[in-house]
Length: 240
Image (tube, rainbow, N blue to C red; front, side):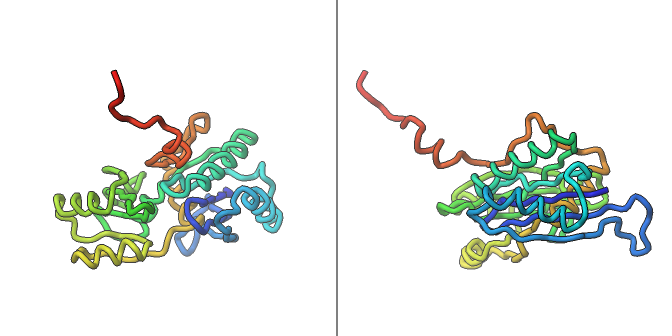
């Protein structure tokens, strides 16, 4: 089983190709990573499709041989997510390939190796924070059950932490970790998940029967794009 992983959710992206073995392996892990390729943020529209094509060619595989597509669904870069989703839809519809989406916050929660309730956070820019709270149990078919995902100002985010008595936050962003440290909240820095990580999570979900509806596939933006924000009519009190 050939798995294609795609991540264009942040400033740096990646594409990965993994092989899943149907027969039990001596080392116990059914997944083997064939190759991971980095992508430069800001160039996803030009690089993503050629990178996938080159990756498959180097591994001696065809697009029609991809058995599963895993994609980071956000939150993150609005443009990057749109490019990934459009590419995934094209591949999936052309070859009837199943797709599994994975939230970036979900992947962070799982990469923490913590159990029970886990809170993950991402810098959303504009002094805002993307956050997600999950119930993590790696033995479950869906290993990270979402409790909530949201976007809030940093002050609103920390108010929720205080109200819920959250003891630790997991994040790949130094900015968030530093600001939390200033107010006495513990955080743990993690590497941002890449396409390989998303492929591994998606494979576990797929084996449990979880997959996305390609017809309605969309990114997890959590907030509107700048174009939508600035083109929306302003609310106010005008003349009667």
